[in-house]
Amino acid sequence: MNYIDFLKEELKIAEAGGSYAVVTITDTFGSTARNNGKMLVLPDKKIIGTIGGGYVEKLAVDDAVQCIKSGKGTFKTYDMSGMALESGIICDGVFKVLIEVFNSKPLLVMVGGGHVGGALLKQAKLVGFGVMLIDSRNDEKIADKIALADTYAHVEDFAEDIPKLTIPDGSFYVIATWGHHFDGQALYGVLQQNAAYIGMIGNR
Image (cartoon, rainbow, N blue to C red):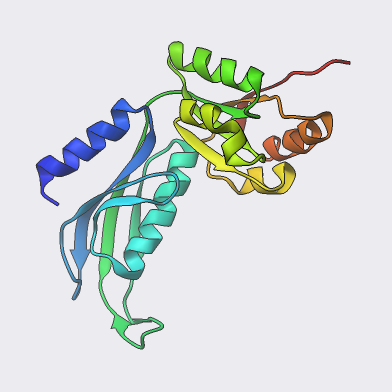
């Protein structure tokens, strides 16, 4: 991928309000496969571009996702000298990379895609939030709400699955699921995340 195409892909993500990281090789030592490269990393570990592939790229992707979640960039050094891979090939060399994080908009995480969830997704986008929807229902039942969200995560169990999701620290959560029992599960799951705000809806 040439540099212009790379910038176009980055612009698409930024204009959509997505969070992402840019990983750039800054220096290499030893018999490495390449001495330059750049890639975009999304929260779901999707990548655009490359820093050479292989195990070092996997390490960089994992670190980039953690940086997105914390909202902080970093420098990383990967010393692959003498490392044996599953293929039996011995890796060599040292990679240094810069990880830059771009969280374009504050993120509203709507837990529940009902009438309230749909209304809040619309309002949040109007005032400049990125929006993520989490629900456990059949996707077809809430297809119109999924279409409103920038990102969507289907879960089987709110309490168990929400802590496993990669969601940036400092996000804003609103819980309005399809039952009080599920609200409780969702609250437990959300409390495992580092939230800026947690709100719920419900009667006494």
